[in-house]
Image (cartoon, rainbow over all chains, first blue to last red; front, side, top):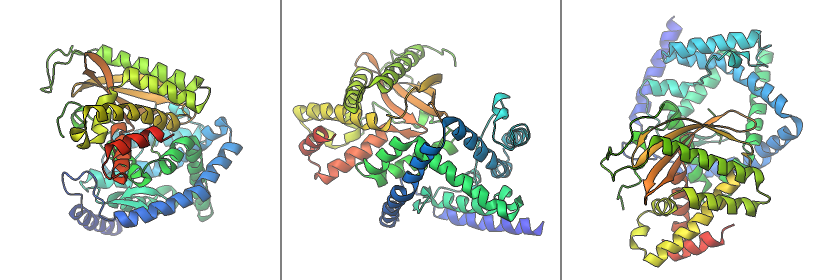
Length: 245
Length: 196
């Protein structure tokens, strides 16, 4: 109990620190570290060309659509305990319960998560992470950050990512030798995504006028919409008839 | 770097709900427009014989359904104000071709996609139509279409793919090009025309 309290204490301190460096209101993109982020972005493009893109090609060569679906199901199922833990922290009890149902059904009837019978049963599928938990407790996104290997993020979401990686309940519960297997499937899953959106990612990274600006826009708008409930709200969109210049 | 995956006819809008010019567009019409655009886009992506052919088909679709002059103006920003009539129309024409090639390349893999309209709500100047896009492999994703009544016709003004505005995307592209050319709209137009 005291350990949990201590961790919550750390989180509270962290949260207040992060709020203090939240983006000023009215500034669309808060990016004080842009020069450094741009360097990291160039590094990420090298990583993509030498690692991710070839891995994506290999994935497309090896896996058929059917196998790819099985792999998607498996990694989605592995991610469920962390999502459930975060939804409990966010007091989204209904979502945590349906995801628990999903995890139980797919792990048993779905042969360890290879199949997705929960989907056929109409059990809703939702995702969450610790960055979303911090958001739920009022932590602002803070500055934009481009992370090596991971790409776009924010200060808040970087903390979230670190916590998710360090405290994934599945990893903590799994015997040591299986942890590498979990990481392995996640890497293969990423290669699958790289393959699936090959043209899209190629165009974004290599044929944009300024790929750093595109990447930043994509990450921030996508993430803000996701945290705002998954849809752009009519009240927030750009007015086509505004005479702003 | 990861690409993140994831009503009923209402009141007919005759009033200017947002204090804007009267909206002649109805929810049914807005939805119908999206159905038509989707069908044409799918046809273009599935049946294009080459990149050039797909770009041409995309350009026709944009010209037919989108409010290209308004999108081009909004993507350009304040430079629009100081441009002459001839400069504006040359820029809009170049922009239309650029946009067709830009998205024609990005979406070439979306063969056989299916769009299901899931709802619509009132938005500035018209409606925001929600849809779910299913591509052949992979998870479906949300796409929202901002449809407005402009120049007596229903047209698409903006599109949000999983929350990312294509107008904002265009603004980033055009803004960078313009900066690199010292804010000169003629050089920008020439560049847009020469880009492949």
